Length: 377
Image 1 (cartoon, rainbow, N blue to C red):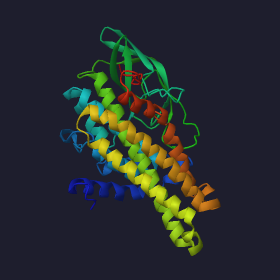
Image 2 (image 1 turned 180 degrees about the vertical axis):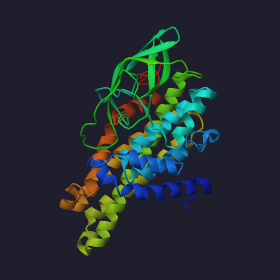
Image 3 (image 1 turned 30 degrees about the vertical axis):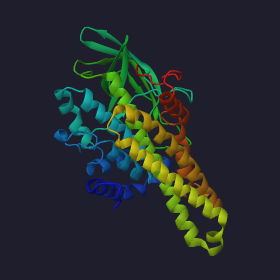
């Protein structure tokens, strides 16, 4: 048992680790397009891992950001593609819980917790390293109906999702609409081949005059502040995924060096790479746990981008070192090692690149000078 975790947290981490081990068998098939992350997501739902951010009253775990970080690391260590879909689903469940009415929560949360339906949050990550994920959809109200128009260029899980959670700007007001992915006017594109995070169902989503029925709009709380909280949860979840990638790279490299020959094991340059990988991965893990344990939204907003930044950088450096340690074998498609490197690089620019995280950290340090990068104003 890790003394930094409670017995409950340790038991939960071990549960996710056991379930994640079975997902790892399909990780290369997911990456190569033989299958998608959908079946693996079902295994997480069966173990009630998908529902950790949902309330117990609707079948969820009633847990918080620490459990999100723990789950993300374990899933990220075997398949970051599955991890990004799971994190998006869990944060979407959080939004349903906070902003939904009792009727709305009862309508959508139990099925989401049980994995009967998959949720995806529709955000436009823009075309610049300096753009935060934001709302790319506008809405127009007519009587008791809301009509959506707009496009998000790359939505994780969109080709797999049953329901899309869509931030919508209606004039100066921000709303969240729950839209059936098969609804008329919704066009989900095709997942294109990517450097990393393949199989995560990432594709553009377009809305053309999509009618949202009365009762499918979430707006019972402070939507702007809730979306800022969702941003921080995403950062913590994605930091956990990066820690998982770094851990997998370290474990594979250590086993390889130990099992090859004394010459490689005694090589100082290799020892130093392993030492750096271990140190940076542990530092990223601790900062992620610290950010997840903050009870004040302000404290979490300060620590979450730091964790996301450090974890992404550590994952890229660690997985790159792993490829180097394995040599030509680490460069072979299907080895699993080069997939870690590609997924780490994708995480470095995914859903708010490390440059955005640096801006967020600077914004907390220099509030009078730095520009507020949050799109949720």
